[in-house]
Length: 169
Image (cartoon, rainbow, N blue to C red; front, side, top):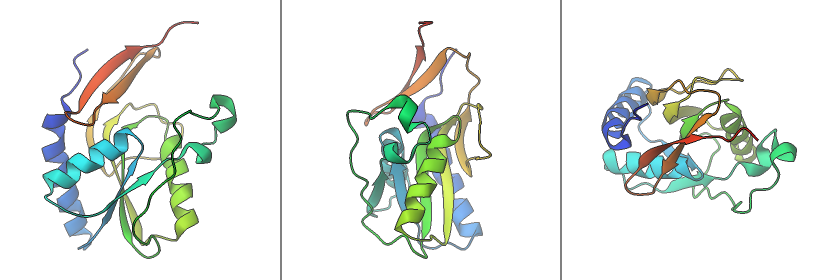
């Protein structure tokens, strides 16, 4: 399987995001990346859009509904939101949309900070393995993987995708 090149996806994604925000009448949106890959994609999009806005970061580890099964990741870091959430238009960015559980966790965390006016979801990849009814507003590409395959975003610069095969153990 040939994986798409993020450098080729990002310019189109930036144009689509800009167009979507304009159609919705959103003049100012705050960008929030989900650690770690979503932060890298958010930084790349801000660069593409030539925006010098502060970037919020979320670590949704404590908000995951599978936290007790997966345990505490050793690199959990606090979320950083350098702007108000209440009443603001947010662009939430993740690298890979798979089950939808990471996005659900991110929304739960955001609403703990306030009630945003809107949330626009951007994802570099959709693995079309949804468990929850969550879909990206702006999407780089959709991939169909075998059950034992995953995609990992490498970065922060340059961004690259790596196909990984899970062991059967």
